[in-house]
Image (tube, rainbow, N blue to C red; front, side, top):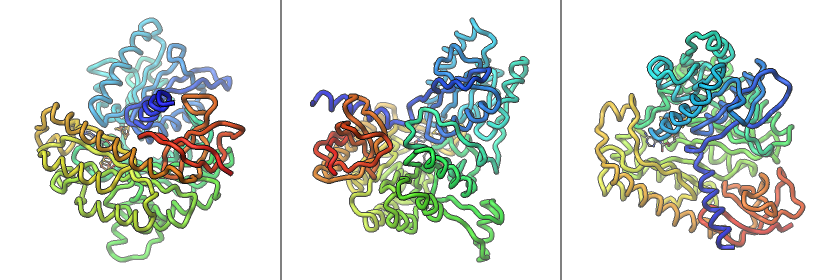
Length: 489
Ligand code: SAH
Ligand code: SF4
Ligand code: F3S
């Protein structure tokens, strides 16, 4: 048992590392003429975009394949968030190019954030791809692929202020048929100094709530039981029937003029009302924007999961200021206190942390550790600082913390999180929790796995239970990453 638990731990931790994982398309045969292979890196939003891309390509004569060597078109939907992410993609591109030598008619395309960041450099200087398309230009993909097939340059990295792909019904890739992601906004206006996203994804814009509700309703009708609403900063979701333009809305609000707007709390409520059997999650919450109204809405609806991903990045106010996060340690703590006051201790809280940002001192790093102790995070994504060309930090500050110091600090953060995760998971032992079954456990066919409201993986014996069902599980054991229990009626 001990050995099995350890193995599951490692698997689960890896699968939660969404930022560093890759997802590939599966075989789908609907009798179309051509084959598309798509591989996706980066965040959940990028994975959601690949489902939009697949839908666009499907409407233009493509089925998906899980074997890139048999594909007519190979797409890599890429991430630029850290240097390592880009290195991985470059390695992959050289593997694809080896196959292309034998099969010159194959078209290779780079999509996503790295396409946006490097633009036609990938085509002209490096000559490793045929098509380069940024995150707002996916409607142009079929045409660009044709252009490339004619041997011409095919690039579109135009960033839009309006595009939300609202009308496109994503083709679910890697789906378990139970949980799905729904994009509610695109881009980011925050300009955190370390971050490349505002440059690769453009200005923030919110998607029409009617199309969001329709998509969630359709998912529910198809048997899905959980949707995760996605945006870089979901708390700044804002949409108006009159004119959906953020600058226009803000101007009106400043003047004190009446405008009917749908904010994130309103949207959450609209999705939650689809059915008490449809769970609603969301990511990512920005500490500067999360409101008590959102927390109260979460409390009112049992089906809105009690879990908040609230990235702190650092526990020190001076470092936070340099990061341009626009909140202090005290502000962050106030938001955590509000979560605990309104939603109680059971609400899961997770974070992203960056170790060794420019000029960070040892004492300031200690502030990150003490913040973690204060919050008692259930889980964190943890990174060391990786300078990204073109960002505010790259322009203004020296990347002056030596790599070994960054790594040492990161290790301390990881160790702290491991201890906190175990401590938090132990609190679940003895409780009966509602779990939505997502499928077989990765380790054993005799076990099923699902998640509790706080987003923790729960494993229990299969018996006759099916994925998509809700069960009440008595939690009996835990590791740092997983809970184990048995179904009780
Ligand atoms: N919109 C989300 C974050 C998206 S990027 C938010 O504001 O919280 C995901 C995470 O990657 C960030 O939270 C940050 O912790 C990390 N990250 C971003 N840029 C980075 C960089 N240059 N070096 C290291 N980590 C970085
Ligand atoms: Fe990047 Fe900050 Fe926007 Fe998150 S909020 S995507 S960290 S700029
Ligand atoms: Fe990466 Fe772009 Fe997402 S940089 S983390 S894929 S928004």
